[in-house]
Image (cartoon, rainbow, N blue to C red; front, side, top):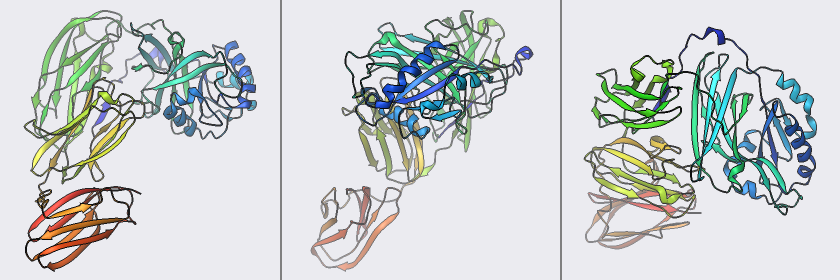
Length: 554
C-alpha cells in the first residue's frame, strides 16, 4: 500500500509567531443516553454550565447503546461506539474533559476544573467553517490548523458534526428528557480522524470534508466541533466551534495541492496518470498556475493551468500520462509553481510526494473482502488484465452494510489491476471498507478513497487448471458444516489424492487414496474442526488437477 508523505509543511520565517501561545478552548466529551435516569438528573446542570461559558468550553455529546432505547445512538452506532470504547466508558452519565484531564461521573468536575484547564495555553489555533449545499443535502466542514508552537507528528485532527439542539414533543427514551444538545451525528472523515504531520510554529494546513447527511432532525441546527488530540496520551490540545461565516485567509497568493488521485497503491505496469485537486488558500483570485510532476527523479511533465478560483475554491486537473521503470519503491512528486505569474506566499503546500511500492507476486486465489456502506448501489469493482480486459466484476449492490467475501482464480502470468469504484465520490463511508489480497499481503484497501482506489499485482502461473475434472467428480454439500463429500467416477484405474487449503494456500487437510480401480467412489471428509470461512478442495486424478471453492459454516 502506498504511503502518502505530506510535504506541505515548511518554515515560513514568521519569527514573530514562533513559540507563541494560544488561548485554549476546553472540550467536554459527554456520554449520555435517552433511557438513563441519572443522565436526566445531571444533563441540565451541564447544559447550564456550557451556555454560561461559551468562550471557555465547548462540547460533543455521544449517545451510548445502554441502558435502553435511544434513537440518537441508533443513528450512528459505529462512531458513538468508537468514542465510547476509546475512553473505556462503561456507565452513563460520563464526562471526559480534554481527553485525559478528567474521565468519570459528572459529579467529579465543575467550573473550577474548567477554569484550571482553560489557564493552560495551547500550541495550536483552530478556525472552522461549515456550509450546507444549495439543496441542503450535504454539509461541508473546513478546519484551518495553525501551529503557534512545534507539534510532533502523529497528532489527530477530529471533526464532529453536531446537531446543536434536538427537541422531541415526547421523550424518545424512558428517562423523560425531551431536549438534547450538541448531539454527535458524524465524525469526519470517520472515527479515526486525520493523522497530522509534524508542524513547526508558524506553519498551517487546511482540512476539508463533506457529509451527505442523514438522520438529521433539523438541518438548521447542524454545526461542527473540531479538536486536535494526542492519540497516545489522549490529551486534547485544542478545540473549536464552527461558524457559518468563513474565516480569513492567512496569505494573499497561496496555491495548495490538496489531493493526488488515480495513483495505484502498488504498480507493476509502469503507467501513471495522476489527477490532482488544486485549491486557492489565498485572498487573491487564483487565475494561473504551472503544474509539474516527476517519477523517481526523472524528467518532469509540466502543464499550465488557467481558471478563476476564489478563497477555498478547488479545481480537479488531469495530468498527462507517463510511463516509468517500476522500482521497489516509486516516488511520484507533484509541484505547483508560479501562481498568478508570481511567487507563492506560502510555498510549503505546493508539493505533494507519494511513495508507491512495486506490486508483489502472488498465486491464485486472490481474495476480496468487502463491507458495503449505506449506499451499496454506488459500489462496483473489477479485475482487469494488462490489456484492460475485464476478467471479473461486481456490483452495484442492493443490501446496505452487507459483508462480502469472494475469491478469484488467475491462471496466466500477467500484471493485473483491481479497482474499487464509488459513484458517490466519497468511497465506503460509515463503517464500509474493502481489502483485496493474497494471504497476508494487501493489493489494495481503503474506505474514504473518493471515486476509486486501485492496486496492481503480478500472478505467477501455478499450473493448476480450475475445474478441469468437473465431469468426473462433485463436492457436496456446499456450504458444509460437519462432513464434506467428494464423489468421483473413474473411467479407468488412476492414482487419486485430495487436499483442503485455506485462502493463503496452507494445507489444512489432505489424503492420498493411492491407485484406485475404475468405478464410482465417495470420500467423506470431516470438517467439524475447521473454522467458518472459504476453503479450496484440490483434487488430483492421475496427471490432472482441479480446484473447487467451498464454504464451511458453523
